[in-house]
Image 1 (spheres, rainbow, N blue to C red):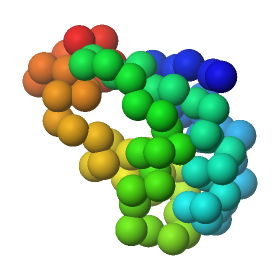
Image 2 (cartoon, rainbow, N blue to C red; image 1 turned 30 degrees about the horizontal axis):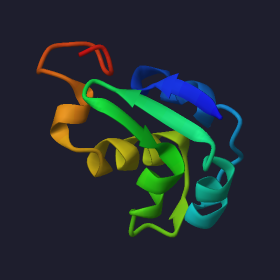
Image 3 (cartoon, helix red, strand yellow; image 1 turned 120 degrees about the horizontal axis):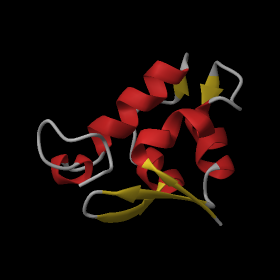
Length: 84
């Protein structure tokens, strides 16, 4: 089981070849726990909620993960991501 803070998402994304399917990413990240401002979420489970089947870039995945997380997950406004 790997554990990363939300603001370290880039480290997980750096090992991905794009384009990448949602199914592949969910499978690869089933052992990754995102440490959030208000708890934890499994990265694979978060991305499984996406309606996108294919991601073209790191930015696409990062944006989608942020959109799928509840607002409270990233902390209070003006705080660094995942440091709430």
